Amino acid sequence: MAREIYLDNSATTRCFPEVVALMDRIYLEEYGNPSSLHHKGVEAEREIRSAKEILADILKCSPRNLYFTSCGTESDNISLIGGALANQRDGKHIITTKIEHPAILETCKYLASQGFEITYLPVDADGLVSPEDVKNAVREDTILVSVMHTNNEIGALEPIAEIGKAIKEKNPKTLFHVDAVQGFGKSLIHPKQMKIDLLSASGHKIHAPKGVGLLYIGDGVRVRNILFGGGQQNGMRSGTENVAGIAGMALAAKMLYDHLDEEMDRLYEMKQRFIDQATKIDGVHVNGKTGRDSAPHVISLSIEGVRAEVLLHALEEKNIYVSAGSACSSNRPHISETLLAIGTPKEYLDSTLRFSTSVMNTDEDMDDAAAALAELLPFLRKYTRQ
Ligand code: PLP
Image 1 (cartoon, helix red, strand yellow):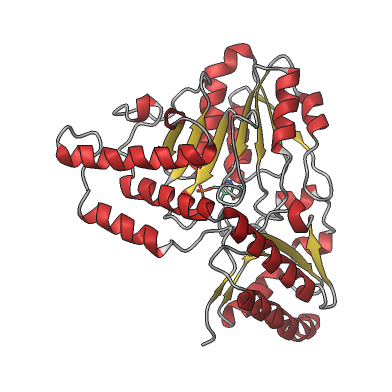
Image 2 (cartoon, rainbow, N blue to C red):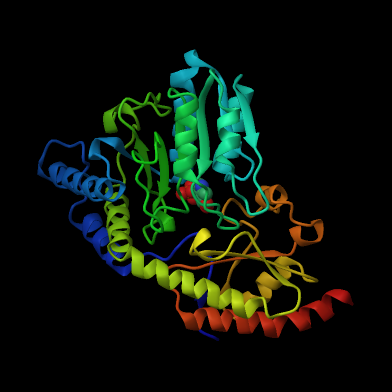
């Protein structure tokens, strides 16, 4: 069997071994409940405090702004539902975009069923939201705007700082939520400076485990808790904290941010190297922007004459793992909202693959994946026509 080439890092990542070692120690030695008053509890609580300090340093905020959840989806849900419930006296209008992850789009559908009015902003052919459009859409009764930092399907980098400025110029009371699940660990994100009130991130996208998410809530931002129970985390998120996961997420984030510039340079080079080789093959097109105007780790290719799922499994035979469209939501076949929103031709909707890298990938991975595409495509296209 060929060596494994994992290019589905936007779906999830492999844990850093250092993270696993730290979690192992916490599971086996510092296994106390952080709410317990005895020494084992204090030890666990110290791990959480130290994780908060590391993450606060990265986000340039205070540790008191940070809450831990179970995943990016939960952070998105608390931000939108909790933000909407706490601010509904000021209005019931919410703005988001057509290319958000289902964690946002489905939550908006729920809020619409509860009487909130949702505006879905369009994007251009590269998946970008216009700050001007945001400004025009914000009204007196707009309580929340939610825009993703990095699109998970085509790697569009949204102009978050400009959008933050546009919102606050039009209505300083409107909250700004950013789903940074794909951007955290790859970009410098400073909520205060970007006028972000609420921010979501997720552990398993940054070489930490599944089951831990991060939520930033700015000072003075009103959010109602949506979980009820023991009152942990100032009542904002009841439930015993995932101490090992939290510590693991902080360590993974520190490892990424300590070498961010050089590692992101390397990812951009790998991305370009792969695109150069893949687009030499007939009928292979890149979706969205490339280079520094795009995410370093997401490459979306539309491939003429072959169904994505067929190609995905043919690559799998070679021990190469990729996604069809955005397979990070579920394994139900669905039409990608992002591809529709950027005006992808109908014939490509079902023949688009996402290759997503991480700091664990190498040039050799990209060369081998591109070579596999070049080898498989003529064969699969002939087979598809029969
Ligand atoms: N938001 C975006 C942009 C994502 O890509 C994902 C996961 O793929 C999520 C939210 C959900 O994160 P989680 O899997 O941690 O719930």
